[in-house]
Length: 257
Image 1 (tube, rainbow, N blue to C red):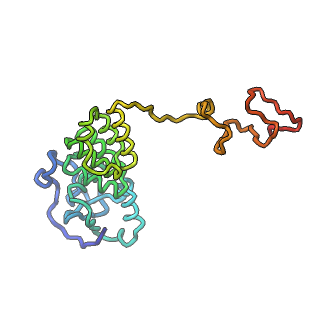
Image 2 (cartoon, rainbow, N blue to C red):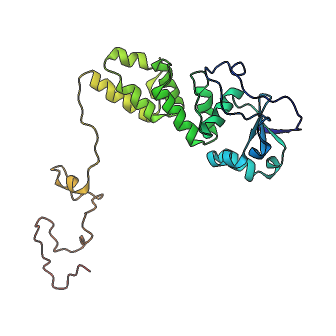
Image 3 (spheres, rainbow, N blue to C red):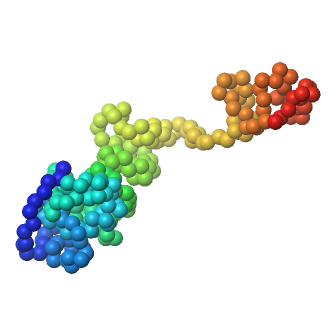
Protein backbone atom coordinates (compact mmCIF):
# COMPACT_ATOMS: atom_id res chain seq x y z
CA UNK A 1 0.00 0.00 0.00
CA UNK A 2 1.35 3.45 -0.88
CA UNK A 3 0.39 7.00 -0.06
CA UNK A 4 1.83 10.41 -0.75
CA UNK A 5 3.36 12.95 1.58
CA UNK A 6 4.82 16.42 1.22
CA UNK A 7 8.59 16.81 1.45
CA UNK A 8 10.22 18.60 4.36
CA UNK A 9 13.86 18.94 5.36
CA UNK A 10 15.17 17.38 8.53
CA UNK A 11 18.57 16.34 9.87
CA UNK A 12 20.25 13.56 7.92
CA UNK A 13 19.18 10.13 9.10
CA UNK A 14 22.39 8.32 8.31
CA UNK A 15 22.43 5.02 10.13
CA UNK A 16 24.52 4.37 13.20
CA UNK A 17 24.77 1.34 15.46
CA UNK A 18 22.17 2.85 17.78
CA UNK A 19 19.73 3.43 14.90
CA UNK A 20 19.51 -0.30 14.21
CA UNK A 21 19.86 -2.29 17.38
CA UNK A 22 19.34 -5.58 15.58
CA UNK A 23 22.62 -5.41 13.70
CA UNK A 24 26.11 -5.96 15.03
CA UNK A 25 27.69 -4.21 12.06
CA UNK A 26 27.46 -0.57 11.08
CA UNK A 27 25.89 0.06 7.68
CA UNK A 28 28.12 1.45 4.97
CA UNK A 29 25.08 2.20 2.81
CA UNK A 30 23.43 5.54 3.48
CA UNK A 31 19.99 6.08 1.99
CA UNK A 32 19.31 9.28 3.96
CA UNK A 33 18.91 12.76 2.51
CA UNK A 34 22.57 13.44 3.26
CA UNK A 35 23.62 11.54 0.14
CA UNK A 36 24.45 13.34 -3.10
CA UNK A 37 21.21 14.49 -4.72
CA UNK A 38 22.51 13.25 -8.08
CA UNK A 39 22.41 9.68 -6.76
CA UNK A 40 18.66 9.49 -6.14
CA UNK A 41 15.47 10.43 -7.92
CA UNK A 42 12.82 9.16 -5.51
CA UNK A 43 11.91 9.07 -1.84
CA UNK A 44 10.24 6.15 -0.06
CA UNK A 45 8.98 6.37 3.50
CA UNK A 46 8.74 3.36 5.82
CA UNK A 47 7.68 3.75 9.45
CA UNK A 48 8.30 7.49 9.23
CA UNK A 49 11.85 7.01 7.97
CA UNK A 50 12.75 8.29 4.52
CA UNK A 51 14.91 6.41 2.06
CA UNK A 52 16.38 8.27 -0.90
CA UNK A 53 16.54 5.81 -3.75
CA UNK A 54 17.32 5.35 -7.44
CA UNK A 55 14.04 4.33 -9.06
CA UNK A 56 15.65 2.55 -12.02
CA UNK A 57 17.93 0.53 -9.76
CA UNK A 58 14.98 -0.63 -7.64
CA UNK A 59 12.95 -1.38 -10.76
CA UNK A 60 15.72 -3.64 -12.10
CA UNK A 61 15.48 -5.79 -9.00
CA UNK A 62 11.73 -5.78 -8.40
CA UNK A 63 8.76 -6.02 -10.73
CA UNK A 64 6.68 -4.36 -8.02
CA UNK A 65 8.78 -1.20 -8.09
CA UNK A 66 8.99 -1.26 -11.87
CA UNK A 67 5.21 -1.07 -11.99
CA UNK A 68 5.04 1.46 -9.18
CA UNK A 69 7.55 3.90 -10.65
CA UNK A 70 7.05 3.50 -14.38
CA UNK A 71 3.56 2.12 -15.00
CA UNK A 72 1.49 3.68 -12.23
CA UNK A 73 1.44 7.28 -13.41
CA UNK A 74 -0.28 8.72 -10.33
CA UNK A 75 2.17 7.21 -7.82
CA UNK A 76 5.24 7.86 -9.96
CA UNK A 77 4.62 11.62 -9.79
CA UNK A 78 4.44 11.78 -6.00
CA UNK A 79 7.37 13.48 -4.32
CA UNK A 80 7.31 10.99 -1.44
CA UNK A 81 5.78 7.52 -1.64
CA UNK A 82 4.88 6.00 1.70
CA UNK A 83 5.04 2.20 1.94
CA UNK A 84 2.49 1.24 4.57
CA UNK A 85 1.88 -2.06 6.34
CA UNK A 86 5.11 -3.53 5.03
CA UNK A 87 7.83 -4.39 7.55
CA UNK A 88 10.05 -2.51 9.99
CA UNK A 89 12.28 0.11 8.42
CA UNK A 90 15.43 -1.81 9.35
CA UNK A 91 14.32 -4.76 7.17
CA UNK A 92 13.81 -2.37 4.26
CA UNK A 93 17.28 -0.94 4.92
CA UNK A 94 18.71 -4.47 4.59
CA UNK A 95 16.69 -5.03 1.42
CA UNK A 96 18.21 -1.92 -0.16
CA UNK A 97 21.69 -2.98 0.94
CA UNK A 98 21.30 -6.44 -0.61
CA UNK A 99 20.38 -5.05 -4.03
CA UNK A 100 23.28 -2.59 -3.74
CA UNK A 101 25.96 -5.22 -3.09
CA UNK A 102 25.99 -5.20 0.71
CA UNK A 103 25.06 -7.92 3.16
CA UNK A 104 24.62 -7.44 6.91
CA UNK A 105 21.81 -9.94 7.34
CA UNK A 106 21.12 -11.21 10.84
CA UNK A 107 18.58 -13.50 12.48
CA UNK A 108 16.43 -10.60 13.70
CA UNK A 109 15.67 -9.19 10.26
CA UNK A 110 15.90 -12.27 8.05
CA UNK A 111 12.18 -13.07 7.93
CA UNK A 112 11.24 -9.45 7.29
CA UNK A 113 13.66 -9.34 4.37
CA UNK A 114 12.28 -12.62 3.01
CA UNK A 115 8.74 -11.34 3.30
CA UNK A 116 9.24 -8.17 1.27
CA UNK A 117 11.60 -9.86 -1.20
CA UNK A 118 8.97 -12.46 -2.00
CA UNK A 119 6.15 -9.91 -2.00
CA UNK A 120 8.08 -7.66 -4.38
CA UNK A 121 9.40 -10.49 -6.62
CA UNK A 122 13.01 -9.56 -5.87
CA UNK A 123 15.22 -12.52 -6.78
CA UNK A 124 18.62 -11.25 -5.57
CA UNK A 125 17.57 -10.56 -1.95
CA UNK A 126 15.72 -13.88 -1.84
CA UNK A 127 18.80 -15.80 -2.93
CA UNK A 128 21.06 -13.96 -0.49
CA UNK A 129 18.61 -14.49 2.36
CA UNK A 130 18.46 -18.24 1.70
CA UNK A 131 22.26 -18.37 1.48
CA UNK A 132 22.48 -16.64 4.85
CA UNK A 133 20.16 -19.21 6.41
CA UNK A 134 22.22 -22.02 4.89
CA UNK A 135 25.62 -20.76 6.02
CA UNK A 136 25.47 -18.19 8.80
CA UNK A 137 22.20 -18.22 10.71
CA UNK A 138 22.21 -19.34 14.35
CA UNK A 139 18.49 -20.07 14.39
CA UNK A 140 17.35 -23.49 15.62
CA UNK A 141 16.82 -26.12 12.94
CA UNK A 142 13.06 -26.13 13.46
CA UNK A 143 12.92 -22.34 13.09
CA UNK A 144 14.86 -22.61 9.84
CA UNK A 145 12.54 -25.34 8.65
CA UNK A 146 9.44 -23.25 9.36
CA UNK A 147 10.93 -20.31 7.46
CA UNK A 148 11.90 -22.59 4.57
CA UNK A 149 8.39 -24.00 4.47
CA UNK A 150 6.71 -20.58 4.68
CA UNK A 151 8.79 -19.06 1.88
CA UNK A 152 9.34 -22.31 -0.06
CA UNK A 153 13.14 -22.27 0.16
CA UNK A 154 13.90 -25.61 -1.49
CA UNK A 155 17.68 -25.65 -1.02
CA UNK A 156 17.32 -24.91 2.67
CA UNK A 157 14.79 -27.73 3.07
CA UNK A 158 17.08 -30.24 1.38
CA UNK A 159 20.02 -29.11 3.51
CA UNK A 160 18.05 -29.50 6.74
CA UNK A 161 16.81 -32.99 5.87
CA UNK A 162 20.33 -34.04 4.89
CA UNK A 163 21.37 -33.67 8.54
CA UNK A 164 18.66 -36.05 9.79
CA UNK A 165 20.11 -39.42 10.84
CA UNK A 166 17.69 -40.66 13.51
CA UNK A 167 14.03 -40.44 14.43
CA UNK A 168 14.98 -37.98 17.16
CA UNK A 169 16.62 -35.76 14.55
CA UNK A 170 13.48 -35.88 12.44
CA UNK A 171 11.23 -35.15 15.41
CA UNK A 172 13.34 -32.16 16.46
CA UNK A 173 13.20 -30.74 12.94
CA UNK A 174 9.45 -30.90 12.36
CA UNK A 175 6.93 -28.69 14.18
CA UNK A 176 3.95 -30.31 15.89
CA UNK A 177 1.39 -30.05 13.10
CA UNK A 178 -0.42 -32.22 10.57
CA UNK A 179 2.05 -33.36 7.92
CA UNK A 180 -0.59 -32.96 5.21
CA UNK A 181 -0.44 -29.20 5.75
CA UNK A 182 3.12 -29.01 4.44
CA UNK A 183 4.14 -28.24 0.87
CA UNK A 184 4.07 -31.29 -1.46
CA UNK A 185 7.86 -31.32 -1.85
CA UNK A 186 8.23 -31.19 1.93
CA UNK A 187 5.92 -34.17 2.39
CA UNK A 188 8.05 -36.12 -0.09
CA UNK A 189 11.24 -35.22 1.80
CA UNK A 190 9.65 -36.35 5.07
CA UNK A 191 8.49 -39.65 3.58
CA UNK A 192 11.89 -40.44 2.05
CA UNK A 193 13.77 -39.57 5.22
CA UNK A 194 11.36 -41.54 7.42
CA UNK A 195 11.86 -44.63 5.24
CA UNK A 196 15.63 -44.24 5.31
CA UNK A 197 15.76 -43.76 9.08
CA UNK A 198 13.61 -46.88 9.47
CA UNK A 199 16.06 -48.83 7.33
CA UNK A 200 13.63 -49.25 4.46
CA UNK A 201 15.55 -48.49 1.29
CA UNK A 202 13.70 -47.52 -1.83
CA UNK A 203 15.39 -46.61 -5.13
CA UNK A 204 15.37 -42.94 -5.98
CA UNK A 205 13.19 -41.96 -8.88
CA UNK A 206 15.14 -41.54 -12.09
CA UNK A 207 14.17 -40.22 -15.46
CA UNK A 208 14.03 -43.06 -17.95
CA UNK A 209 14.66 -42.38 -21.60
CA UNK A 210 12.64 -44.09 -24.30
CA UNK A 211 15.25 -46.78 -24.87
CA UNK A 212 15.26 -47.94 -21.27
CA UNK A 213 11.50 -47.80 -21.09
CA UNK A 214 11.06 -49.88 -24.23
CA UNK A 215 13.48 -52.55 -22.96
CA UNK A 216 11.50 -53.02 -19.79
CA UNK A 217 9.81 -56.45 -19.60
CA UNK A 218 6.77 -54.68 -18.24
CA UNK A 219 6.55 -52.51 -21.34
CA UNK A 220 3.28 -52.96 -23.23
CA UNK A 221 3.38 -51.60 -26.75
CA UNK A 222 -0.37 -51.96 -27.08
CA UNK A 223 -0.85 -49.18 -24.56
CA UNK A 224 -2.78 -46.22 -26.02
CA UNK A 225 -0.06 -43.99 -24.59
CA UNK A 226 2.66 -45.78 -26.56
CA UNK A 227 4.79 -43.34 -28.53
CA UNK A 228 7.54 -45.06 -30.57
CA UNK A 229 10.92 -43.40 -30.74
CA UNK A 230 11.18 -43.82 -34.53
CA UNK A 231 9.34 -41.19 -36.61
CA UNK A 232 9.14 -43.76 -39.42
CA UNK A 233 6.75 -46.06 -37.58
CA UNK A 234 3.38 -46.25 -39.32
CA UNK A 235 1.00 -48.21 -37.09
CA UNK A 236 -1.81 -48.21 -39.67
CA UNK A 237 -0.13 -50.78 -41.94
CA UNK A 238 -1.80 -54.20 -41.41
CA UNK A 239 1.39 -55.95 -42.45
CA UNK A 240 3.63 -54.16 -39.98
CA UNK A 241 5.39 -56.29 -37.38
CA UNK A 242 7.54 -54.50 -34.80
CA UNK A 243 8.91 -57.75 -33.44
CA UNK A 244 11.58 -58.13 -36.12
CA UNK A 245 14.53 -55.70 -36.08
CA UNK A 246 15.01 -56.40 -39.78
CA UNK A 247 11.42 -55.64 -40.71
CA UNK A 248 10.81 -54.99 -44.41
CA UNK A 249 7.27 -54.08 -45.43
CA UNK A 250 5.51 -56.70 -47.55
CA UNK A 251 3.46 -54.25 -49.50
CA UNK A 252 5.38 -52.88 -52.52
CA UNK A 253 3.40 -49.69 -52.23
CA UNK A 254 4.46 -49.10 -48.61
CA UNK A 255 6.49 -45.95 -48.28
CA UNK A 256 8.33 -44.42 -45.36
CA UNK A 257 7.67 -41.02 -46.83
